[in-house]
Amino acid sequence: MNYQRFGSGTELGIFLLPGLFAGSWIWEKVQSALSASGYSGIAIDAAFAEIAPVGEPLDYLQQEIEKIIAASGFSHVVVCGNSLGGFLALKIQSDQNIPIAGCIASGAPGFGKTSDLGLAAKRAFSLFDAKRVADLLFVDPSCVTQAQMAECLSHFKSRHSLLNITRYMKTANKVDMAPLLQGIATPCLLVWGKQDRVTPLDDVPNLQAINRHLTIEVIDPCGHSPMIEKPDRLVKIMESYLETLPLAELAES
Image 1 (cartoon, rainbow, N blue to C red):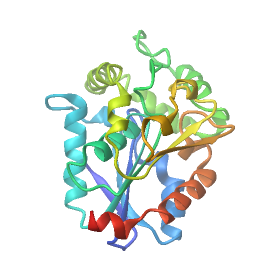
Image 2 (image 1 turned 90 degrees about the vertical axis):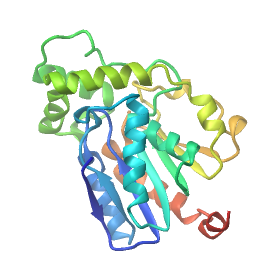
Image 3 (image 1 turned 180 degrees about the vertical axis):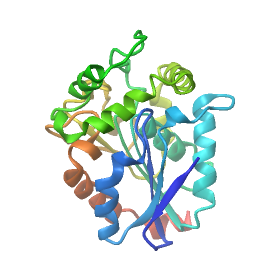
Image 4 (image 1 turned 60 degrees about the vertical axis):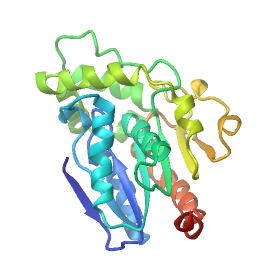
């Protein structure tokens, strides 16, 4: 699993996870803004569709990410992810196989039936499909380029990637988020697009009733991926969250 490091700090590391179809490019604007504010971290390069799992698919991805975190040298780690990456960020924070100070997740599956964007039954894909998917993913489809959408769609043209996608989606659609959220013991932030049609906000439960460590910020208007559609707003939300983390207390626990 390839990754790129940004910033020169070693105390707090922000780990940016990709989605199933999109690689580290989804975080480019957010990463640049965080770097300019003095934050450091690591961005996983490839979309998860490119990574063939060994054994249980989601457990494999989690273990590979945790290896990178453990070897990173950061004193404290906050894991951030969108969509499948959001689920993995939440699971890593909940399981605490390695110490995690916090988590920022958006569009994670597990709160209801996740949309397959109408691609699962198709056998041929075109730029028209890419544009239609963009219309479903974003309130403003112009936030993503034609080349970026074509790159995401290319995974459905690759037999290797398509097999991986099938395995990941099949497993993710069986996920029950409630017990995972109950296990989180450090501050956790969910950031949801109000117009998310892949993992609708209406499916997200009353988080405070589940766990006092959970909070949610809703961005309106915004679809499934705030880091692409509303990066400036997301950066402000992330920085506010990061500034309130009780790192000294977490180090002693």
